[in-house]
Image (cartoon, rainbow, N blue to C red):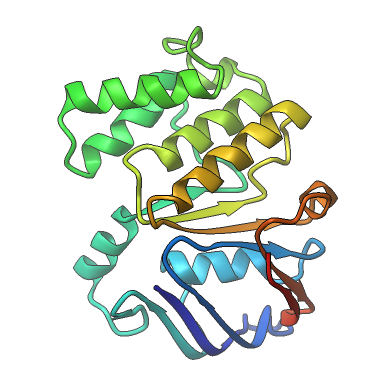
Length: 221
């Protein structure tokens, strides 16, 4: 479902963020991109989302070459992806519930169904008592859990997560990983970028080590 062929991404005046990266991930696969900050993990996720285009090489998601699709097709592509951004990108001034349910409404879910599903995910992530709280009043860890709930809601076929446990304690980090792992059981592809060494303690998923913008090592889960 996800294929990168000899991808390079360079920015003006900088060394290449990614160099000659080739990677594939099929349905039901969980891939952990592991490496230090600045290794190129976030750039790779941005390419899969379509927020960036490669300088060289090809990025395919399903039967779409992201470098060659129209703006309308790109919008449809992004609606099929659940994303946990490193900076969360929540809607300040809106409630916890709104931040999750509105993402579903944008994808075409009715408001009632969106609210019901949003409540379910937020309760799963321990936020059932904070539904009407504005997100700016939450702690960093709580905001991160809202972002995770938003990504999971709607059961998207592709999940991209950029350092999704950076502000979570051990309990919620494990819970988040369990929820992401559960999605592979229905065929979703999960690509998670992290430099958290906790992910190496119980390696059940495919590990792709990124260093200096290159794939340095791959370890099967």
